[in-house]
Image (cartoon, rainbow, N blue to C red):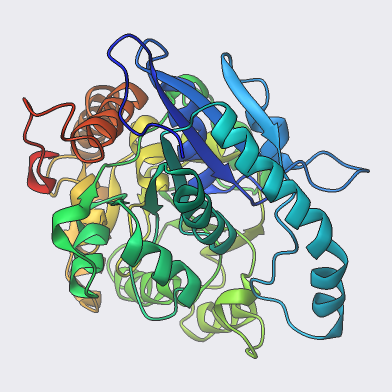
Length: 420
């Protein structure tokens, strides 16, 4: 066992678990933490999945060059999330022994470097292995939740969360969902995500996007960017636009993203359902399905309004991206959305399932260019001042210190409600 109490003369030692090879939204947030945690206060390590021997993983490519980051290549075994059948079983058996030796080596690494905090996402291999390693080494375990806490969360993850030293949600909504599910309130916190502004230039020229899709410079353009699945609100948005069309006949909507089969197991293509709905509502000439795109800043630059009425959004990074591009946001007044988008300031919120109010909010913004500009400016300002990596890292650092090591930092009372 290593000494869990930080020395006043040395930085705290933190290990992030990065078991997934892809670089999703949660990985990007943890990458920002790894990059921006103050190196005078924290020595940062990561257990990083490099993928197979033939191709470097996307997460490795994104993380391994962060300055002053100590990387420990780790095999985590096969992921079974969203998979079933004989091939998965074969992958699990094939990778089990290498994973065992690699994780045993990681335990030695944790002990050698006297890691004091193991920081996990809610991904099963992150949380389960991270918690086990914390108990075998004497380190503290923190599970960072990026989704609403619900019964579908893997039982191994729920077990790790119930026994972890701290739980952190990406919004008050996510944090409250953990408490409502029965996780201890006295160890549950939230820290809002942040956005690195380097790639989000509001002066970017969006005209090439309009030219690509045959949209005139004068046509009002709405945009929604997400995986295509039910809870993102595409269907409700189409219903609202069918109402809007009665009074605002000229507009376009770009629907950007691919189907997410994991969200609709056993269901036919959701994009096909949405295309059929658009056709039935008389919106075929108004709606363009682009599929997956990587040029999101350019798409944001081209639009007038970002509109995503997603239900119980845990946080909504795409809202920050739209706000950074000085675009007003249309969203719902529930979930984490209302913590990010301030109604009447950076966008307009409507109650869930209130199609008429959703349509009215869109119409208000379409008919008021000055209001769109004012909201866009306010949104950009909020991202610049509130949703910064420095702020996020500072708040996480406070949790490391004042929740995980209160015996060392008795001078600071840190409560979940203090974050906002």
